[in-house]
Length: 144
Image 1 (cartoon, rainbow, N blue to C red):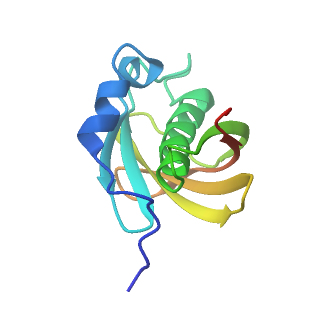
Image 2 (spheres, one colour):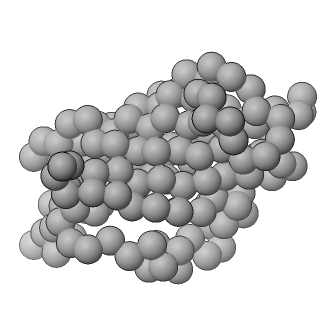
């Protein structure tokens, strides 16, 4: 059985409220599932996320990856004491996607006192790998 990694009980509806009027909403990104040790979301492959050649833009993949990893990073810490912000993100785009949607799954690879590393795999509707991303998050204490 997988160990639950979240500091408190995650609420997908609560995240969705915070995405109103942001790039996440404009691009059609939706958080769909939170498991014991992962967070999953989808993004459409359409005019909102395409580059000029009719494929999902690499930057759109990065927005999906960073969205999932950032939510996860803030879910594993005590929000009354600290918060987590993006420090570095990279992505390897291994397959173009022209239609349908993509699904990203973020998993915690490392949790330290001052940083976290998340790995995000993005697949197309057939489950084929489209992008692998790694996100480093800084854990910042609230000012006293």
